[in-house]
Image (cartoon, rainbow, N blue to C red; front, top):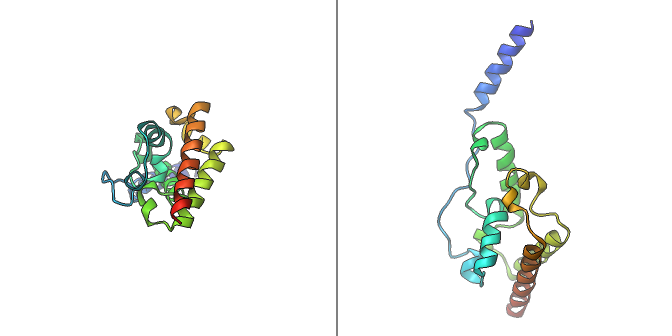
Length: 152
């Protein structure tokens, strides 16, 4: 009986490897990308690329382990959720009040140490933000918030 259960589990685990989520991969920088609409310094761009873009743009860099299901599904769920909350690649499609709110949220989650997620930094230790990087991101978001408010 145990042998039969193990074979069934093995078949299921093998079978789910063929059911893969759609990947969030694009190398194009669209006209709606935040960097095309507002100034993003090289320092901020580097921080965003290292700690934010995998979940908050249209271009996720997938590590090898996402080819193993159900890890791939779990990661894709995080990416989809991140993009629903904020997508830097589609920032220009947001209404000014939503852009303003996005900057407010960035400030809040950085100040409260809620981003990047612990589950992300466990596997991407380079995504951990230093206090100086947090201050830089918060200051950038505040400046951009003021710029957005001036246009509203």
